[in-house]
Image 1 (cartoon, rainbow, N blue to C red):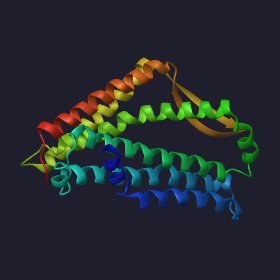
Image 2 (cartoon, rainbow, N blue to C red):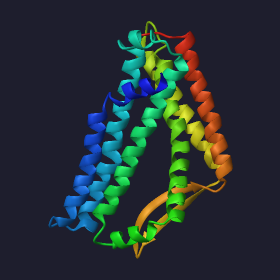
Image 3 (cartoon, rainbow, N blue to C red):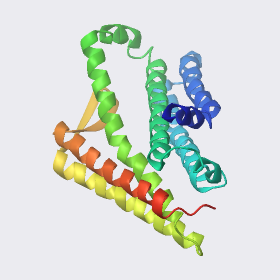
Image 4 (cartoon, rainbow, N blue to C red):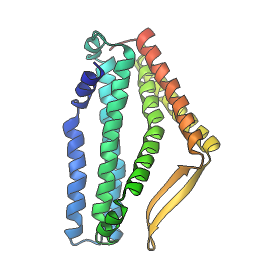
Length: 247
C-alpha cells in the first residue's frame, strides 16, 4: 500500500518538477553558445535562478501538497484509506526526498553544462567516472539526504501544529511557523556544535566552484539527524492520530 501512496504523491506535481529539471538542463546547454560573458554575468544570474527561485518553487509545491492532501479537503479521503498515519506521512517524506534529489542532480548537471568550456568539464567528468569516485559521490549524496530529512520533517511538523488551531487559524499558523523555525534552528545548532562542521571551498584554477560545509564527525552527524528525524516524525504522527483537525 505504501507503494500506491507514493505513486499518488508523485503524481501531484510531477509535471512541474520535471519541467523545472528540464529547464535547467536546456539553459545549461544553451547559455555557453550565447554571446555573454558567462563568468562575469551569466553565472551569478543563472545560479540565482537555479539555487534560489527554483528551490522556493519546489518547497512551495511540497508544502501546499502536504497541507491540502492531509489537512485540507483531500484529507477527508486520505484518512479513510486502509493505511496508518505513519504510512501516509512516510509516503510524503519519501516522495519529497525523491523530488529533492531530482532537482539537486539537475542543478549539479546544470552547473557542469554551464561551465563546460571554461574548465574542461568533459575531461574532468571522464576522470571522475571511476567506481571509487562514484562510490564517494553516492556517499556524499547519502549524507546530504540524511541532513535534509530533519528539515523536511520539521516543515511538516509546523504544518501539522498549525492545523490544531480551531478558532484562530492565523494564530495557529503563527505558532506552527514559529515551532518549525525553532526546530530547524535547534537542529542546525546541535549539528554545528556536536558534529564539528568545517567550511570547505573547492576551486578550479583561481575560480571558486563550490563553497560548502561538512561535518568533521560523520557518525555524530548521522546520529543527530536520526534523533531529530525520529522526534519530528513522532510529533507529526501524534498530531495526525490524536489532534487531527481538517479544514
